[in-house]
Picture 1 (cartoon, helix red, strand yellow):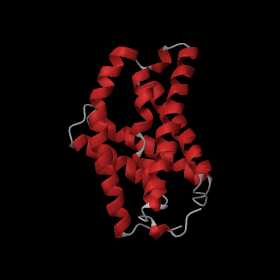
Picture 2: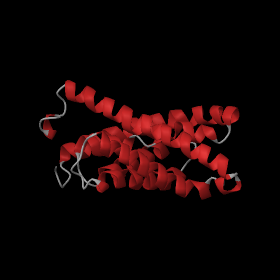
Picture 3: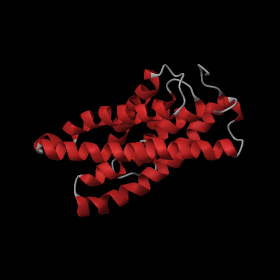
Picture 4: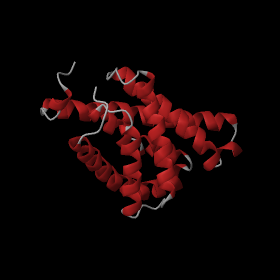
Length: 185
């Protein structure tokens, strides 16, 4: 595992951030429509998509800190592109990036398997949900509703932040775009 960022890593993370920043802005509008239909569950359904920049950045570069950088830059791109959440997206990006980073730190940045992606999905969900339970006013809901919201978020984060990130990784690996990481298992 590399311990520092090189120019190619910075370019890759920036590209991930720009792509996801645009996706985040596009899903802002989808969120507005969904929130009318399913209320607070709209946030939880889409949440996994909103955290993908972090785990993808670290999974492709394998550098400590890359999840935080990827998620914060993705949030910054969302702000620059005119996302409806404005500057508040940056704070969320920091929280989400830290949550994602923790999952890889648990494995000391040595395990790049499903276990690290799933751990990252769990830590991202716990950290971000803990922050947003107060920010979004979930404390006013019943415990059953809070558990339901958490469960939907966890499923979303596992799907987008683990399954889809792993799928993107595999596609890039098959295209021989990840030679800089060495042989893959």
